[in-house]
Image (cartoon, rainbow, N blue to C red; front, side, top):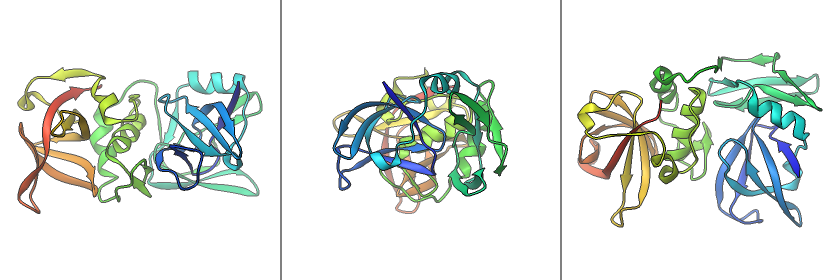
Length: 254
């Protein structure tokens, strides 16, 4: 088995081995993966953080040993919590990294802490659900991008996943997968700040999610990351004076 690590700002994973294929998600700096297959200049990989699969360009593959990967997976993570910050790997390489990037670096068969880091970090030993709202608000007005997990563009479930990652709570990648995690809350009046709301379409399929902030407010990525009103019916967009998403269920993840 081959293993790799993202040693640049981000790497897009595509649905098929083609530059024109749809982006399904992104690897962030310091995230690791297994290589499942090869096709021409493309590699099918599986991310270790959430088991998501996709194709990456072989040029972006940075090999790392199985021993280093195992240590990175077991270690308590320190992540960047600035929108954009700089990490100096060595004299000739400075990498801009985004919120939620890992700050442990693989060096051969060993790992080391990123000391030459210019920015704020959060060291995670235990889940920190109290920080979810604070972290979520950093993304306000970031543009929507299908498959995105960064301040350069983010989708609804990518937004949820990366905010919760920074707070030490591991979630799957897609909204429907996330809806299967955590504990169900029966009534919106019982929900707390940091709980998740999930919304479905006419076929009953979960297609959207957002973070409750309390006082009838929700932050979610729809067109851009925005604040809206929420109640037992769903999300009410005050700009257009109508409900845009139908409530399906509430979950507590912390």
